[in-house]
Image (cartoon, rainbow, N blue to C red; front, side, top):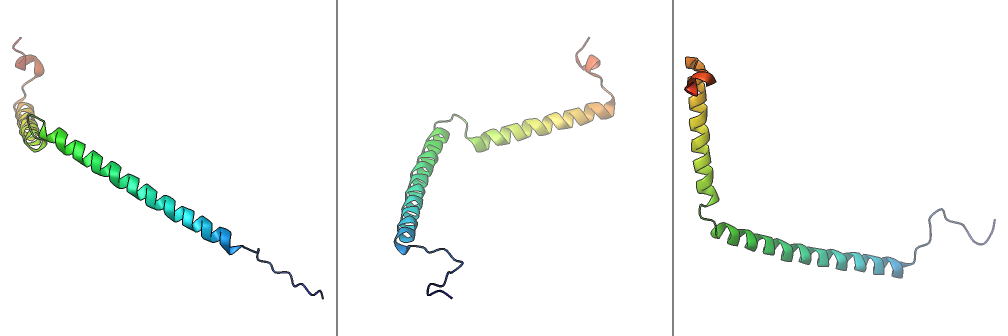
Length: 91
């Protein structure tokens, strides 16, 4: 047998691993800071855009829901009563 016992595991230098881990951590922190800044800007711009609207989105949703419900009711009534598109057009 030789004086050097060979190991099946590679030899790592801890300095490079510590440096690599530190750079990954720093990059992750910078990415999180960028995400926070960008997210806050998007939130602020969206709030400003909604504030400048003539009709707020919640009110617009209520209007569209009422329109859709009326159209569904009219369509169901026309289907049940047998009114054709030709009769409804008045020709």
